[in-house]
Image (cartoon, rainbow, N blue to C red; front, side, top):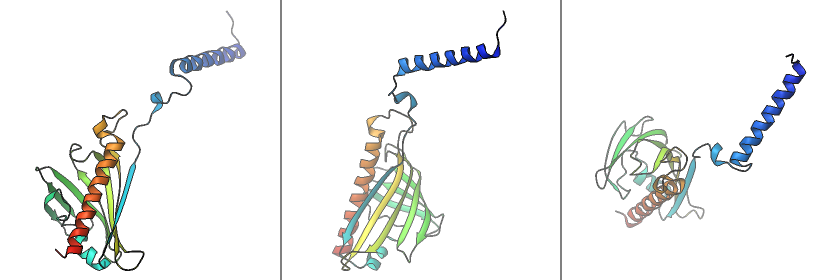
Length: 193
């Protein structure tokens, strides 16, 4: 049997089209679940107005080695103060711990950034977490705005996460933590304690 190159090309094109048609029939033209790429980076940004000068707010929260103002934290242990690469271990109510590392610190801009290096997703349902705390004068010039912004992935890195490790659970947990921390700090500063 003799086959020419032209016939081979036509035969290959027919088989390719048949294969594509079979895949479309099996998965549907609009099906994306078979092609899902996993989680996307989530972001949370919370802020609060505090009736105090920015320098006073920074003095209360600008030390990376002190997270006593965050309600679930019972103890902070760390090394290297506010130097880039400084570390801290937060012990939470109930005994769970969170390890963090400072990667940006700017006292003049009243801002610092850190990342979580170790946390159980049962404690905080996130992975690859980093955040920044920044103090600025409030818009009316009578106080301060403290902003806490974070970016992270959900606690379950694959497709179809359980509800407690979903994007929604991660965002809710981080937002709740930020709001509780900001409210606690506001109360501490404004009461003078």
